[in-house]
Amino acid sequence: QVHLVESGGGLVQTGGSLRLSCAASGSSFSIYAMAWYRQAPGKQRELVAGITGDDNTTYIDSVKGRFTISRDNAKNTVYLQMNSVKREDTAVYYCNVGAWIMGTGPGDYWGRGTQVTVSS
Image (cartoon, rainbow, N blue to C red; front, side, top):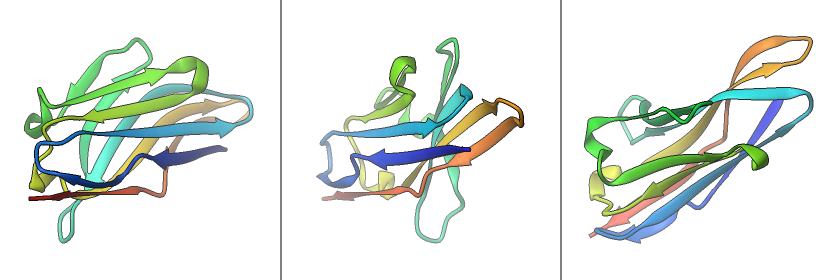
């Protein structure tokens, strides 16, 4: 089992910056992919950014050039640097991790989410 704890959410003004962090913990696991999703009120959850084990990244078009995903493998932590935020970035942001659990196999894990609110 992998436990994820997100931090860094909060209230930020339009044009400002915020950095989200997600730390994974557990025993006998190996992470192969990490991602951030978000869900705004009344909308479906969507993939914001993802990063593979060899640091290949992908972004939803609306955040390209503004958000950067990165990971620290030694700390089992993924980050989302959010710059030039817009009101439409307001959502609950969820960390997602794909990991291989020794003796169990692959699994997909989610954090509880952290609220990001962008004010004008």
